[in-house]
Image (cartoon, rainbow, N blue to C red; front, side, top):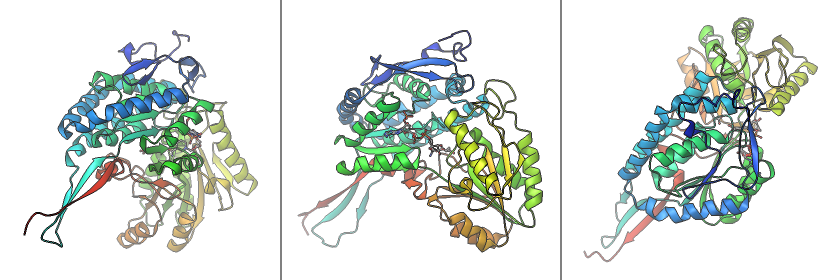
Length: 492
Ligand SMILES: NC(=O)C1=CN([C@@H]2O[C@H](COP(=O)(O)OP(=O)(O)OC[C@H]3O[C@@H](n4cnc5c(N)ncnc54)[C@H](OP(=O)(O)O)[C@@H]3O)[C@@H](O)[C@H]2O)C=CC1
Ligand SMILES: O=C(O)CCCC(=O)O
């Protein structure tokens, strides 16, 4: 590692740069390792253990051993540990943001935003721990009473992606911990350092050994780790965020042990602009929704449908704004868009653009890679439903814009996909807000806004975009079992 050029060589707290896995409260060096690279420069940042099946089984065993004591703590006691963890994350936000930008690429201010957003799930669920209410049900037999308890499901596994290396961990781990479950985390191979820094802060917060474990792996080993987590009887819940393709594999692997599953998979978000919309506001929402994290979020607008009366105006204003995006290394001041995560991500955007051009689309701005890592913010006009960019998640800074005439046509186009995560529309007509809001087959609908995520609301999708909801008071339910106590012979 070249410490002189490493952007994480000068952290305020060097102890946050952890390069070992955490199993049962012990930092594990591992025999084999893989490199973690800066996507902006290609330079190596660190190497971390490339673990496999035996270490995953160790982590599961450690979590299982930690479970009785963690479950036995009162909600207030778990709340106290979680709030300590939350405070340490907030206090170390600058260092965590540096680590995040270094391994993921997003601009430093955006990374800091993710740290705060990620921490908010811990605060939210630490509070929710105290509100896991049971029920009593009016009896139908005076000799009996019916009582409902909610109990932690058991050891949980979390497999997380690289696009939100902190928030996707906390969104899964916080409800598990709050419910009384220990966790085994498998972070994405591109971004393990953020996960390990979070684990270090959890240790400092007094998280008991085995309650939070991080198993790092890449390539073939990731598949082995995933398999061990899915096949384990002790693991009672698996939460995954990533591609629909991998979600299907994990679901299949979990079938023999009938595991509870939370899946947050791919999206294909439509962004509809009606003639009566406030166009400046729609363009502002489009910029946030489309170009945040270089277009690499599952709730990013993937395809734009603009009504014919405002089509040209919307394209002109969006183009002007997209042209103003400064692309570069996320550590440099003034940069709004960092690198793509890797060469495959760049190639996917290129493939979607060439397919669209071959089928009659036109580049209004951008349209090409800057180099192997960076892509110009792009707007395509004259897009049609035959083009790949309207069918698949591009996961890049490409805004394909298509014209429509009627409300019914827009809703039909928006719903014509197997995905159903996020959707957006802009209108000032109150009737239309309800009609379209109710007609869209999506788990989340942004109306006159391009930014919908916050810890207090249910995040998740319809159709093949996944199962379950994260965040909100619903987000803890997947980590709880419902138990019915039937109390008889109480006398009449
Ligand atoms: N919903 C979302 O937020 C995300 C969607 N995506 C979509 O997926 C596309 C591909 O991105 P990619 O990073 O490859 O996403 P993946 O779905 O492949 O990866 C996400 C996570 O799953 C792990 N993983 C991959 N294969 C397996 C397996 N067989 N068993 C267990 N774990 C596994 C990865 O580990 P490892 O990294 O070690 O391989 C990573 O931790 C993107 O272009 C985008 O469209 C991607 C990321 C997030
Ligand atoms: O891409 C994702 O899966 C994370 C979405 C980020 C958000 O919570 O808005």
